[in-house]
Length: 87
Length: 334
Image 1: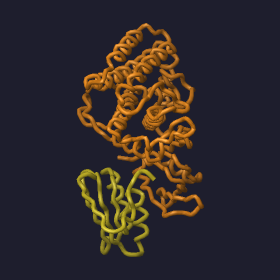
Image 2: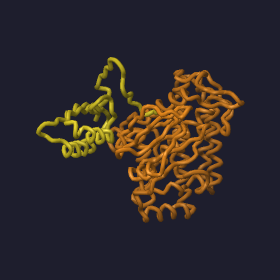
Image 3: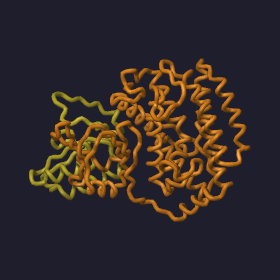
């Protein structure tokens, strides 16, 4: 499964959220991540995230797609982080 | 699906916030923009460039069961960081050793490896024979060598037959490959483009097999066809034997015949031939794509990737060793 994850959390919790997401997904823009993930890993991620968040005012949105090839991605302007497994 | 990461640029890999952080460093020692690698998606790391790291990183990688493979400047395999075995099984280990120690049991496994390898090679040759490349002579030669296998009494004589098969097989490379000439197989150092490619992709194949063995209960140092304790983890060499024609050779044919690689991708100074960085990247991309390709598995009745096929091979070997099911090596059926 390929997902895009965006979050909007209070400034106090933003860095925790960032650090958590970095473990599972590729950072592409402020508070936006994408990457290949398994069902179980996603559950794990959501579980950890919900413990950081204050569900009264924070939000986390996940867009999922079966495979990366079903996702058309357009970048306008500077691409902040190119995803590649060759570094 | 976990991915392999290939590190070409020099830099520092470190543990940061329970994930991996890579900081590239240029020639003057200036640090570039750090890149975070999601640790949960890492299967293994291949280090081609120079990497700085400290023990806390390796402790972390060990905990995450991530293997790191190192290669020197000439892209020769130099070794692996092999985390503590997490799938330990004394039973399998003892049975594996027993299969090595008893000559008949060892021969029966070794024979299967050679037969499957030859079968897969013949598949490749026949494929090209049907497409107008005259490989009939080599096919006949290999078939006659195959008939000698039942008469081989020792593993050494079996290895001899295997060598002969491979030599006839490599003879066909010049017929199959359009633009480049291979001539004789030379390894240290490779003398031309085709040899350089074979060495590089073979090495990727060995490390793949090693990776898969790590994720099973098998011990990578006890092998059957190759003599254990020689060179590297020799069980990986045994398993690679079966897959080399399917994964490595087909990839090389298509890379060269579709002109994905050209003269400009090779460095031919100093009388030998090496892949340039651009070439390496093309090869690795194609290799990754190949591994993720799926085929319909006949007995499992579902699609499996080539990568997973190698792991299934390890499972079959475990079953054979434990006496659950006879080992039937992978033979390309299409």
